[in-house]
Image 1: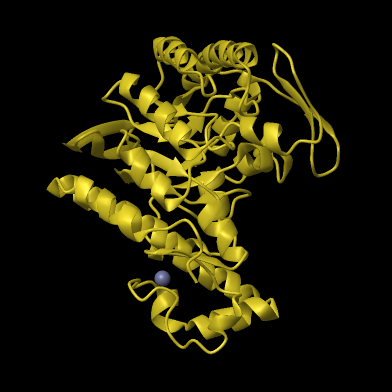
Image 2: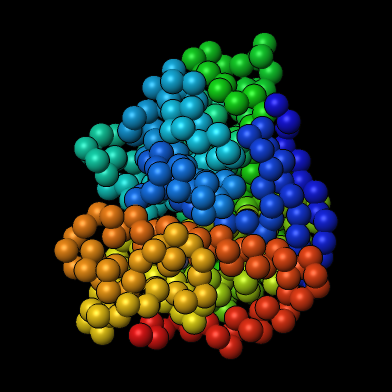
Length: 387
Ligand SMILES: [Zn+2]
């Protein structure tokens, strides 16, 4: 299997066009990863994901560890085989879900202790354990365990979490390298994807000096690439752009940069403009299930009564399956009737819209017209529902 690599092919301003190689194939960047929380991207099949052009999906370590368990998935041959997806997969470390979902959490130097949101059972996730779990899942890209905190956090709290995240990152890297060595491998861990790569995570809240320090110390440990964590957690968009740009400028140019958990369609363009290469977000799938469709002019709420007899497609500019087959009236009917097919059709469109936006971004960088695309997007896309 081909090990992890990244090749940067074009630049347009700070925007970058490249290609990531993983054991399960390549990914054109900038790229968006649909979120497959519990081994499924909610509402769609793997075939539909392939049809909308997904090149990589994200799996949540926290959820898969609790159910059905990483050992069961390892015995099934790893996550790719278990879920029937042979393209690349990135798994997060569970840190963010412990922060946002777990019923109780206690951060210690050893790791993060928490109670499952499913049954209240007590668990301890350490940097080593998070690395082991992801080795058993066999994702192509594993993330280090980091400590997530609420934003805006005071400087002292943000510093403490950043420094702990650096210490945890060092332990996660040590464990990852042990797992790579067949002779030094800790017992009881099945490595289902020997070509797995590991990304470090930059923390530091909205404090630029902390971010700079986190970059220096995390890059120093040595990872295949780097992610920016702790953003898209409630801070204003311009603050997020400033921090993402500040961090991206300092990261090694020959490695991909992943902005975790972002975002709205305009966030993707603005972040690419600042040198980001990789994104994930639940918005296209979650909002689809709530009846919100993303279009080139902004989000549209399909439950609106004015669509009851609207025979037009959800987005006239979109060539996706949903837009070529279904009217707004039909999708509104399915939503109002609670038909699960409605969620599927909405999800197909929203994912197509996100992935198509990334295709347009990549093409614009290739032709040196990214700034024009960005300005067009600013003029035509509104965050406010326009219907
Ligand atoms: Zn569509």
